[in-house]
Image (cartoon, rainbow, N blue to C red; front, side, top):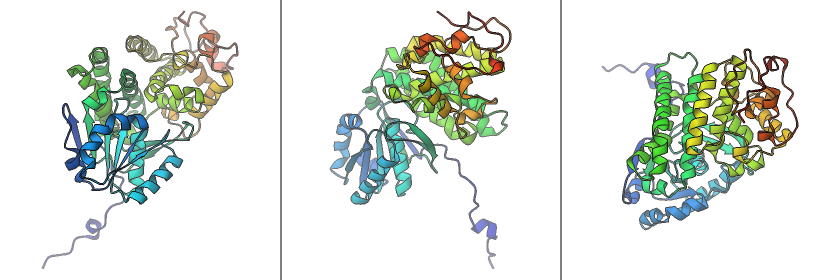
Length: 414
């Protein structure tokens, strides 16, 4: 007689599953893909979630499957927010949607993924720019109605289908790809720190992928931006949309965001940052993170890496200072508010292997272009700490005593 299976086999173990990649990935080089067939695998009543601009460029695609499927369209609003999601959930119920299609940039795709999870629907992501890896990941960022970052939400699975149509992405402004390069670069600078000394095989693989990703971007970004639609351009788009997602998928919780994204999150608390893209703020945040490593760990490799990035940023057009983010005249009180948010207790900034206070963070934020100091000791010159080039004011930052040692008046580049 057959024996019954052990109870441990019949009862699912309460173990967290790691969401590594979308179930299917389709890369389209030319011509419209058979969207009605692709979407029909997942449902017959799709709800398209997009922004107003993305809907405009998506119209030919929408027409390709709206005759065979019962399609509804909804915009996510200004941000992926609780208010927006509440409205979208009602739209799902009214339409009786059975599959969600996210079309657009990071916020549209985040809204679609989170909505699909809340409504227990499959989700398809179709990015219209290469500005983020949101089309890949099992993660959504929540913002307030005014665009201030609130929290990130881990999702149980990556999208069911990712459609990367290069012709669609090519329609986006070059600035979006530049921002995507900045966002993708952070994978190396953050994962190499947050992974620590982990010997986990997938974590090691993720960190090495992040290093390769960085090298690809260093080598190919300038050529890609000079030749939109070319083979090298496609390779860089693959790097920002797909390969950056691989790093997060393989590394999971061990390859977290750290200071670069924490700085981004802090800056979003200021209304004046609405005009800058996610990846632009993150790229600036990488410089801040490296500057912190210089100031608090006497890390000369971080200084060298920062200056390597400054050259690269200048070549492709990424911001290097607050002024480049249109925050050159930022009042000290607002800078402090951003720094305090970035340093809040649950911030990813605290995955750094040293303690960072709002004061030291502000010192790093206003000295991202500082020269490599020849002076011994740890410290940042007071000229850096109240740099009018970045702050646009004469107010000073009160630094802790340990940061006021070894001051060098030649730390700031003219």
